Image (tube, rainbow, N blue to C red):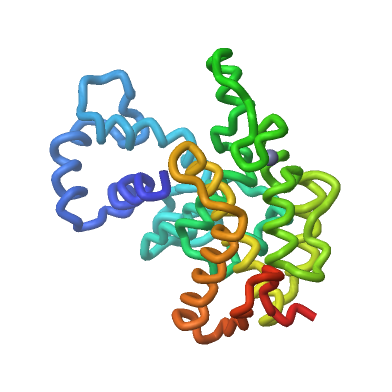
Length: 260
Ligand SMILES: [Zn+2]
């Protein structure tokens, strides 16, 4: 909508832009911009511009001194300023830094974002759409699958998470508890927390991918841990500011993150 407001501003401020110069003689010959009914036959784009007038009328005000946005004259259109005024404002969620301030890849962060919002197609949801589906967790094959079970009620994912964060209390009594633990443990603006956020996002994303792979060729728990170890090795060379020390001996499956 903020971008559409630019058109209203261009017309109201008598901008010399090509579009505004075309609109004035063709659309505004006999009437004001604010009096044109939206029901008239017109293009899809022009109708969109007309429809937002009521939403921005209280902010976009034409005065002799110029075109105002709120209390200030807007000599130059600012999408940011308009967007800040029109957008719905909410308090930042507690997990914001854990996810969006991690060094995880955009692909991983997008996936983990969906997991946090519980928008992934876990079998408990699929079963509601199709009762013929058998709900059995592909990771542990012993309990029903849900977002909360996978992260980290499942014995498999719990072991993987505990192994990757050796010595850290990352697993809670339930999903909310585990998420709260990660938020609390890796909340600081230091290298240790940065490493923790990166690793947490990576582990959650990789667990979900492994869950999805179970329909095809599955990895054993040690194979998944070795894959995560390999990813850490790549990150160590790809992100020099995040130096991750990885144990070559993976018998104990412990990553030496120096988290303490
Ligand atoms: Zn399970």
